[in-house]
Length: 85
Image (cartoon, rainbow, N blue to C red; front, side, top):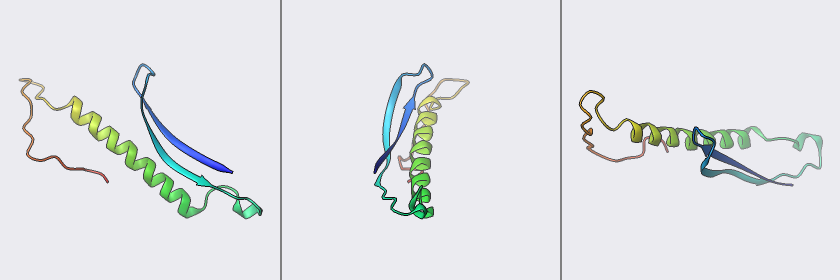
């Protein structure tokens, strides 16, 4: 059986914004102990999901908070780098 897990990021109004493939895998279940995910598979899936979510949240936060609240001047940027990989 083939499985595909996707993360769908939506805006507040429910419109679809971005989709990310989280995991694609094929599972065979000839024995009862093969049902579900292994610990290794679930850790990899959760790590990928967490990375995608945090990266999107950081991008959204930085986009919406790039100016001073009191004077509306843009903050200076010294460097662009990935905060989460």
